[in-house]
Image (cartoon, rainbow, N blue to C red; front, top):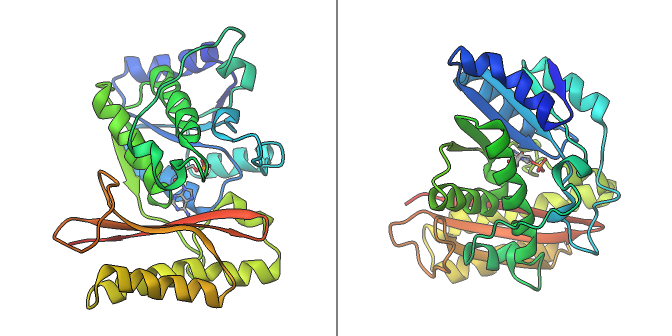
Length: 282
Ligand code: AMP
């Protein structure tokens, strides 16, 4: 596995595979790899000739009171895991490489970024601006044929899909299923913040979503969401939001009316802000 730390190294490492007409798959990550990330690397390995993983804890997507400084980092371990999955190239730039002095551009998707996690009372649209700006840069510097994202961050995937369509970026966005612990908790680097009791309670997030999905098939959607909120309350969890939205436009929905519906939740469990969702197919 080649490790590139700057755009020059990245370009050099991509020259040969590009010249040979090999397809390139990109898996953007913030490191602290878990089985969710590895499933994306495996998908890329299966579909593409040359697999690039980026590792960059992006300060621009963390708010002032958020966990940028204490976000878990273990590059040596990430390198080993990425290599074991057959990754060809790891791109791990510094903050100064991505945001050199004078950097002044923001890529902003409107609308989709202003609800759920983008609500100003939550992380705010600036969070997604940070994401789209860095992902647009990665798309430009790697020029992948396909890029892989997890369904766990459903809103992020929708926002990136919108950006790619709107800016005519020639990449195919692949969204892959959420990988979970045996009790249903979605794998997340932030699960490392949970103590044993919080970890046990955190399983209520996915339990509540599955309950909402099951109830929504026979009851009004609002009643199903109420049942899910009760499931969370029993675990002592007060969600920041638990909402049903059109899976593509993220507009609020009040009934399952033949389109895919996303039920998404965000909640603080102890020190960790966790998110999860379930996609109810029509
Ligand atoms: P992160 O390192 O948290 O920025 O995540 C990098 C990529 O991995 C994103 O596309 C996430 O959606 C994806 N991802 C994170 N957790 C999971 C999971 N449990 N299952 C599948 N994909 C995930």
